[in-house]
Length: 73
Image 1 (cartoon, rainbow, N blue to C red):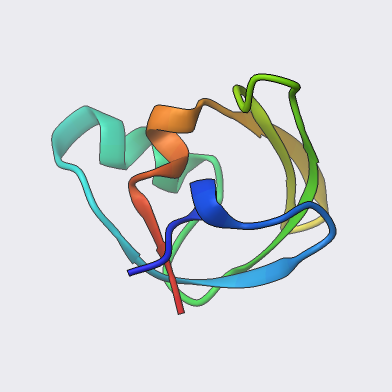
Image 2: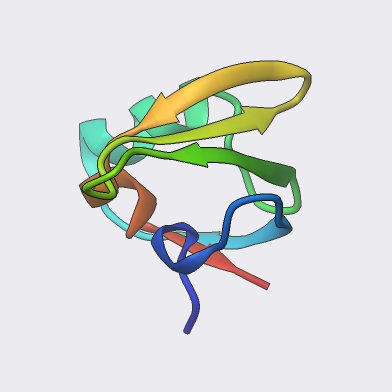
């Protein structure tokens, strides 16, 4: 399954599922990333960490480890 970590710059993707459990999953959901939401990939740092995205009209930076937990449709 493709994850947010695999998305390319300039791509708009849709969240299919959130992996992980407990506090980590809750933190991702609190940032506005839930099933069905669209995410626009703005930038990726030179070494791939962090990833800058636009979610629900605001900009957000995610670690690669967190981006791997977000499965795309």
